[in-house]
Image (tube, rainbow, N blue to C red; front, side, top):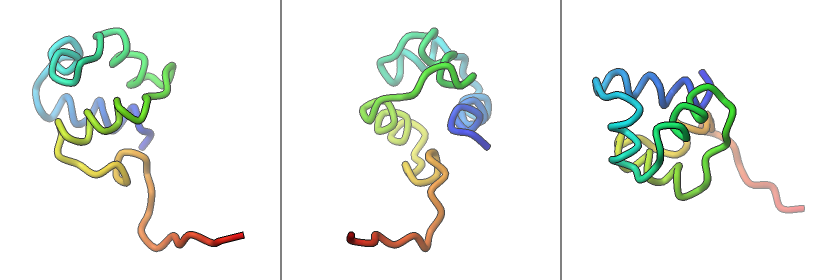
Length: 73
């Protein structure tokens, strides 16, 4: 599932529309729509707001799997 698909699924599970979500996370309905359909990349601040609102991790939204390790070059 893409980032946008996850946001749409979370929003629909919360039974709110794009306008309501936008008000909760300080974004416009259009930006929520663009994020959901992949036309717009969310900023770091947007990701934080969405994580806080939906009570999910950034790792989940970004599709980061456990087990990755930082390799210093």
